[in-house]
Image: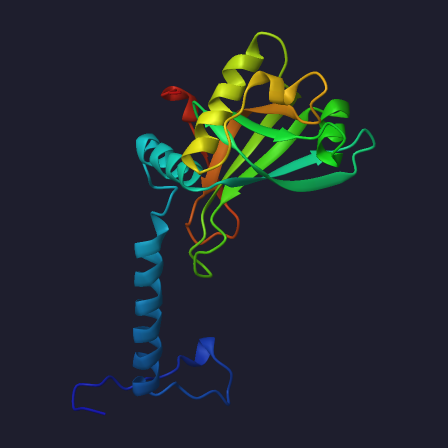
Length: 210
């Protein structure tokens, strides 16, 4: 205690008869700790929620570009959910392509219920630092005139990642695989504003590229 430390007193109208005032040294310690806590929250609070649309798009695009697999959430006709990791290629950050057997559970689910959910994230980052792109989408098997363009998008990314080249014949006729596409209608990322699992919508359709 110094000569300048205040002396704490309790007002009899706002305390119980046997209450004692908290010593100033203890109160100061609590205030200092609280100040540090709130300063840290203030520095974090901007998070994704405080970013501009352009910054949010950059975050989402960076995650989509950097990763190879997405988690695809589907449901069957009765609403029973299922999730599957699939290697993907993307066009315009809205169209996600992958190759699967039409007999795979997620493929059968899409045939019965096209509405899907997608998450792309890096599972190797330290705990508490993760970020992901969450999407609502509608999925379908790619056929007809769209097949050549779609398989070209998929093949180009496959080759970049040292995979095989793909042609339309690899995903039609007697081939056991088919090309699928999910078109995202909404993208969001974690807000990182201190609220658990709070997300902010990303306007990805403002700037569309191949």
